[in-house]
Image (cartoon, rainbow, N blue to C red; front, side, top):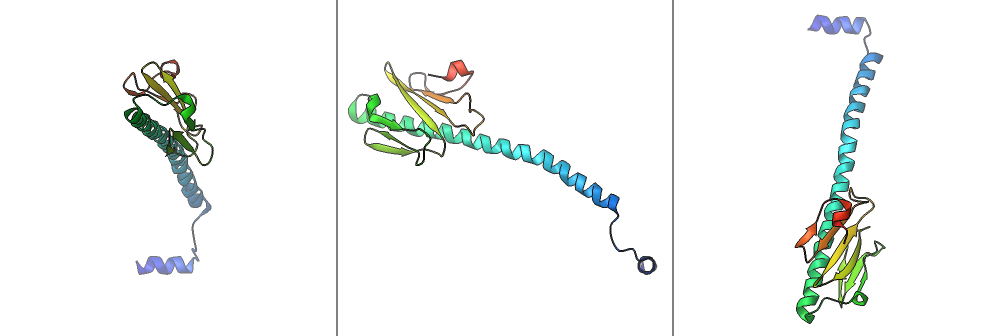
Length: 148
């Protein structure tokens, strides 16, 4: 062991070779190429979860309005949900704060309502999610199937 150290000192071996450094940089690059897309996909899934949560919150407010008044609110009593900042939605006299960027549209249908939510930063940017009170809640599927 001492002989190896002495030989290294005598030969003035002072660092890594260019090949060793290139191998390390390539390995780091490969790991980054794997990790970054996975991370970005997780962010989009989080945005989708925010849309679903906001749809459930607005549905709860719609049902609360129905419980208090025995009728769903008229379209003139539902405002906001445009994704603007601050992102709020008013249902009757109650205000719901939505996640940033989420857009929710309300459509009154026979014996119920339909909500449609999107966010351009989510995986569902072109599809969105819908909540149909007559069909039992949050709906999924093909674009034609989920739009109210």
